[in-house]
Amino acid sequence: MKKQKLSLPARISANPAVSSQHRRTIECMSAEVHTLPPVTLTDHDALLVIDMQDDFVSPTGSLSVPGGEGIVPGINALAAHFTHVILTQDWHPAGHISLASTHGLKPFTDTVQAPYGIQHLWPDHCLQGSPGAELYSALSIPHAELILRKGFRRDIDSYSAFTENDRTTTTGLAAYLQARGLHRLFFCGLAYDYCVGFSAIAAAQLGFDTWVIEDLCRGIATASIEATNKTFADLNVRRISSEEVLALEPYAR
Ligand SMILES: [Zn+2]
Image (spheres, helix red, strand yellow):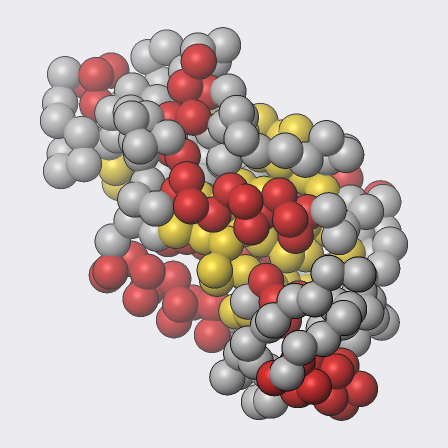
């Protein structure tokens, strides 16, 4: 078997969810090793890959997230360890409330007052059926079991994969996960401080055991990333690296 060199993440030794056996396995990796640590993901685990679409991932996408392309290989590699993977797609009709062009206003800086609160405005992106709305071409997760589309109601945006921005309209994802016995959720994708963050926060509020894989996300702005991290801490949404995921204890309720 091919030899691999892996570095020991600093936070592993401080992470109580990493078993002592697996910690020892990883510590042994300071030298050359012949195998990866055992994978302890179970049938109760799911990887949720958020909005890895051309408009967000591609450097030339209409709402490109800096560094988005760089996380694709890592997502592909980690997804191969999961039995259950769910993808999301932002999926807007023409004239959607979140598009600056709908209102004749400027993206990024202008906002509108929606019935559910302030709606930030974005460039045209992820229009239904457009090339920009396609899953990114280098994303390779053929065993993904569900592609969940969100943001398809003209008058409501949906950052979260669970609950739209009015905080009441459900996408049905929570019921799907519960019906399938998927209780421990790992999030990656784009953008950390918007759709990944809102999805993970909603998951935690709904009672799921919620983890965000930091090295497989990219964010947009420092202030919103910091605000997201604060909410994660308040709600016990745990931040983890992709390497640590493979050393977790098996899920047990
Ligand atoms: Zn959108």
